[in-house]
Image 1 (cartoon, helix red, strand yellow):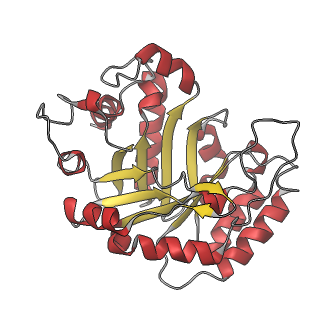
Image 2: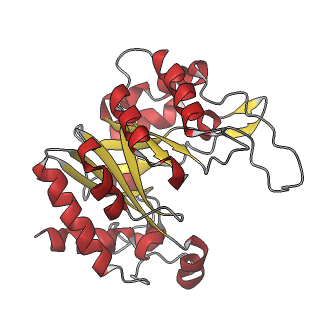
Length: 287
């Protein structure tokens, strides 16, 4: 099971993890110390990339090279693909204004640029995660339309692209048709716990036959702002006890292991209050 399951956190640079993950030293290499405890981490910092029609920021190659040199060779990254590629429209806080289309949405050209920027860690990428926001009918006409667009994008990908996962935040898309579509392209479902999505446990029960080879499970929690208020951004304690749910997650992990599915389990601080402490609990339950 250890060979098929990797457990890590969503991002890694938190001062409040000192004494849990990191030493108390002032000048530390967070990623280096992190990789002494865990064998995977989610990179979400490159997701925020879309700033205007003329400004897209991709990973700096010098930073990527540093990430490659800092961790062991068998360490794996799961990476959120830049939102310049996954956003259908620019963010619109004023709902009275018309939506403005993102010209880079599912751009093969931009995606190839992104792949080139992370070339140094390509062999260490466990999964590239395409995170799509809630796609209402203003942004995407239907699930069929989404599948058509992604299939056209997928057909023009270069060879030897790392594993691709899709995180959908529209519960209405989660259907047999959707999972059949993923399997047809050999891409993988990213389970998200939180953000008003259905229970990952129930979702798996309904579509377990479609979960093959690889999957990513992201534990986020439902109330991001609420736990931020409780914690004051001190991520060193458990503030919301999700023991009952974690036991079900562990049962799910064991079943996936029995099916020989590679699993990346990414824990967010917002899930219980401290991702490292949640990981400790999960490991105890697994034992």
